[in-house]
Length: 140
Image 1: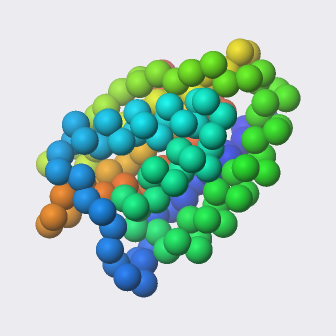
Image 2: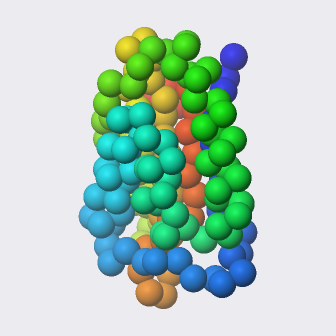
């Protein structure tokens, strides 16, 4: 059974329309590394809080999605074992305006694939969308 724990289509406009911007793709990779370090250590909310300032999603929607993901965490742990780390799989540029960073969250018996999409607007890079799923074949 394919499980999608968090799939946030962050193409919605936030009421304030303001997201912190990153200066370059290297800063986006560093941000994702910080997020994944928290997530892999068992602190999903902490990792998502690191991401929050860089998203374009309204805070209430973002917080609701985190809550839903936290409710599913025990299911993953019972199936896959404890989280044992993370690994950068790929960092793809698409033209001059998009980058996709793919990470694995490694568990004792399985892995979750995380995808982060960043968009470069007028002032810098923002986290446009992210999701994770247990279909590890999607990275091959």
